[in-house]
Length: 448
Image (tube, rainbow, N blue to C red; front, side, top):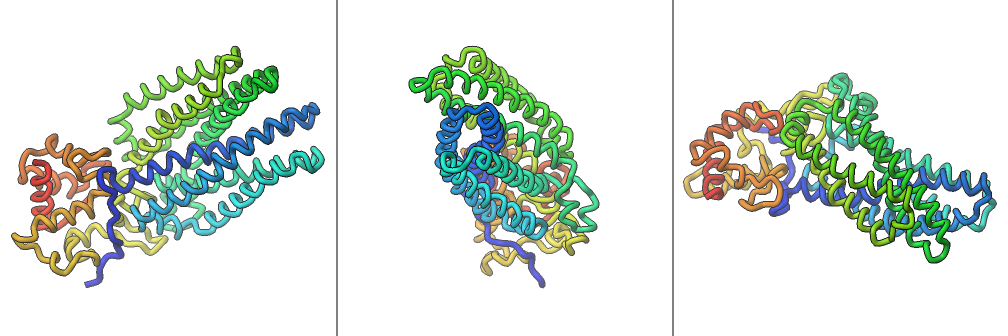
């Protein structure tokens, strides 16, 4: 019997594999989004410095550029590959789908990124070594490269939520996969946040210049406050647009957490509106300590919850709404020659179709039943749930008591809810009855 093209399971204890990617992604977003926002900010500052003959602005850009080299391009370059490494380990078939759909888009994005990295070095090094007009042109191209990396990668990330274009499944076309209804709202959401981040980081730099040039420090802090406020406003508008373009399964998750999301965004909006208002009207009150603190606040209270939400809303899929988070293909994609694997699992089970099942566990016995159950649960569920009772994110054992109290009840839930695909945010895991027995037995022992 031909087996499914599955991979070994990667599971990170207490957190689950997907959340490890989310943690890495949060750090990366803080660094990379600052970089793209700074590209636009640099274009604005260089234009102003050139047109108004203000050499002091070049000193500010140089300081900002040095911060970017350390914060964005060192941390960002470490965590960027870290995202794809953890994503590949957690969902190898999901990453395979992205590569098969977007290999040339990704290659193009890499070219833009290389230019962006070289550009920031050139901007800093040549700031006093070339004429101002040439430097201005260099700044413009840096901004274009920065936005180019964003525009290309956003189409890929949006596809992970859903293609948003039913034609894709029949054509398999990269353009049909890239230009979904979700792509442009997502891009403007990111651009707004990037602009806001450039201002938040800019206030760290400007507030540290008080002793050298108080009037310039106040002026730049005011400007960064205005930039941040405009970026925040664009972020809020784009977020509302983005929400309206999400698929049905995402709205199912969103409905569960909507009240807490709204409250979180209201609190953050008020807090940062006050902060930006102080920067605009009382710039002397913004200290470097306060500016650094607010950067961490936006990361911990803003970016991390946002990343958790995006990871959650994509469930039960990991890419294209045809690959489940447990790496099972859930529908036919004629344009790619891909076949639905759910019926094969229902007829034959994991134990016969998964090439990574040890021979001794392919037949369930009283002696190995719990071991088989653990293996099946890890394979089917661990990409979304931590399996420990007190796991940090979506602990499965903590949820069991809310669903069923005994082994029979657990089996009934798995078989009649997950097995039928009636839950909008969990994958359809249809299996032979004896595999449900093993899963329920192991879950029941752990939940106790």
